Image (cartoon, rainbow, N blue to C red; front, top):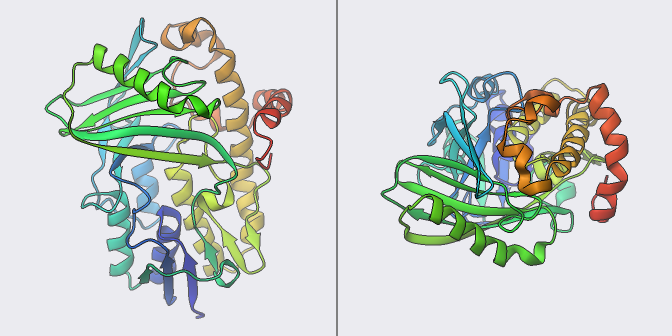
Amino acid sequence: MREINVAGAGPSGLTAAINLAKAGYTVNVFEKRSDAGKRFHGDVQGLENWSEPTNVLQDLQRMNIAVNFDCDPFLKQITTNGSRSRISHYPPESPLCYLVKRGAQPGSLDQGLKAQALAAGVNVHFSQTIPLEEADIVATGPISHEIFAVDKGVVFRTSYGDTNVFLVNDAAAYKGYAYLLITKGYGCLCTVLFDKFERLDACFETSKQMLRDAFPFDMQEPKPVAGIGCFSTQNVFQKGKSLYVGEAAGLQDLMWGFGIRTAVYSGYVAANCIINHQDYARVAEALFVPRQKATLASRFVWELVRFNNYALVVGNTLDIIGLKSFELPSLYNFGPLQKLIYGIALPFVRRRYPKLRI
């Protein structure tokens, strides 16, 4: 078996490396940062459980990924616009999402995947890079000039109880959302903007004030966090011999910007295509591009319901248009209705994001 080189030690790159090593390949992972997760600073993120009909933890198991990282299910979500709220409950076997930490600290998703890669015999080289054309798999993360969303926030210790709040208010998060996540005494408060990025600082301060007014949580040892997301529907999955996965291939969720599940899956698919001598570009295009287009259509619909301070989102009227629950996998299914919406939405999204490949 030939030696495989992977550029990037994020979820997609390490998932690919783990599967290839378990199949008997010699695998080298090259990461420009000094450790796995160094791109993050303890952020709390949602491992989405709403975008597919199957439980994400079962999917991870099928992809040879063990849950050796902190992974807390959330069974209740409060959605609010600052003046009105709705509470959604989810069954234990199907939580809305699992909260995971990102970063180089113990218990993070990144450190868990690193440990699994090392146990599988992967050679991980930190603070080292290779030319991308020499990599068999490119998993280098977001493309900086193809940004569709930015976020700013803070992580902290707190004595406040477990909380999952989704704040929709353009003053707090323009065309996006802010969130407050607290699990086991550890919290993360962020605002995510999908337009008018120059408002990021002001939106963060507004979201922080609104959330602290509604939920009087204490903040101990606060540390800043931030991030970006990139997206494409004209995804390039292969250049020469190099297979592109995760956000390096433009794979993200334009609807809300949740991409961990897709990143892991893309790494698994790339590894499987190498193992089984399949055409990864063709397989990936069939698997991922329809989903990318569906999230573009869903983003367009989301912005149509922004009026009156997102009254539809926090009320019960969403039942009428089939968006009662945010976890509905149908939002990611590129069916006849989504295709119709996509055709209408595409020119609007192209005008807003002229640098995106869509």
